[in-house]
Length: 154
Image 1 (tube, rainbow, N blue to C red):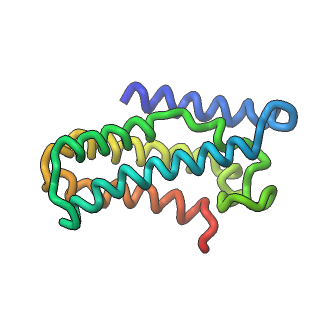
Image 2: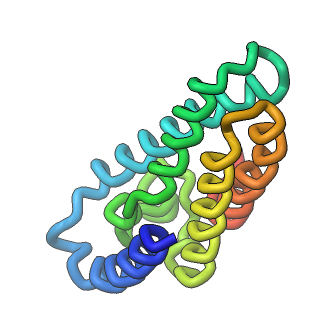
Image 3: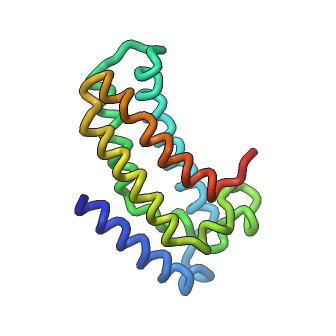
């Protein structure tokens, strides 16, 4: 939990500081590419766990643990550089990030903390099929909460 607290504190500081530096020091296109790649890594690892949880593939404790550990590591990363001001769908075309995200930083940080807690729980339970199945909803709920609030629907 110490890493999560440091990440959240770093996120709050970076978001506050990025407003001042945004115009001259941020590669918005690169930031959007980075956050999309990060989301793809989340989806890939979540897919491994989801396929096992649904019984679409045989449960493999080692593969499940790796995927769960990857998700926890991804959730613990400081991704604030991926979200500079000026990178919402109101500013650029190649993103679904809604401008509301930058107006609600405390809520975003709460959602980040929920994802971190859900991925840590999955990492602690991924050694069994039952553990994976029991923790899928927590991760899905954490992802969905942020996406429902801050991602444009198709």
